[in-house]
Image 1: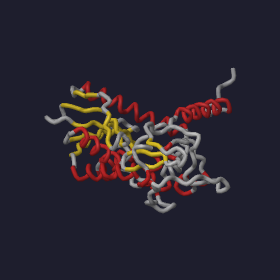
Image 2: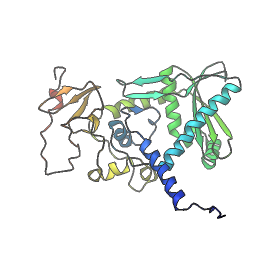
Image 3: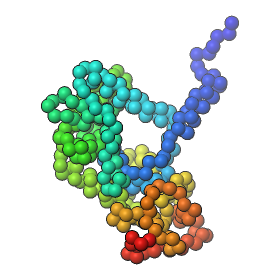
Length: 294
């Protein structure tokens, strides 16, 4: 009887690649809002690209599967909190601001930590990152988590948040309580409004070779826009789209109008970076000419 090889053969390798490709196909890019979970991202341009719906760098199927581990950690931690006697309100509360363009969904609200309820955020980390959290805390090691919690506390009217991080290597748990900071919340709120209503591409925050830039999911769109095919041909990526305050307008000279439904396609869509100079495009109506009658 022939022995099954201990290393993956060609057939097994093919099946693994099929699984990775299936994970890649499962990834959706249909979110048309700025997330409170990402408002701590240090680059305005990266946030603007994401909010407008530009095409991010492709993500490997293996990495998408890794993200799913984080989802399961959240489910497990909430189960353990409840088994330990704490009450977790898991209602998917949605926070919205700036015309619904700034949104967040918390993991839950936990009761019994102290007399005050806490926003609950559950995360996972590998051993190296986990030890960093233990040594220096959430705000220093992962500002995104801190800013996410400040946004949720501010919009929920709560004064405390509990960040629960579980190590993926040994299941050790690190807990940190965060206190609401009004000035930080106001800054994040104002930053969200500035990014949402920006009609021009924000400046680059980092050099091309910097660590932040190397790992940015919009690196290709940022540095090589004319080489990236914009697969999401919707309002936010169109040359004729603009905000005026928090109102959305199509500035096409043939049919200028107030946009009621954000994030849909249009036959008159035109790439704002004008990748094909051979094509001519009608100029946009000036912003000051737009009004409620359009």
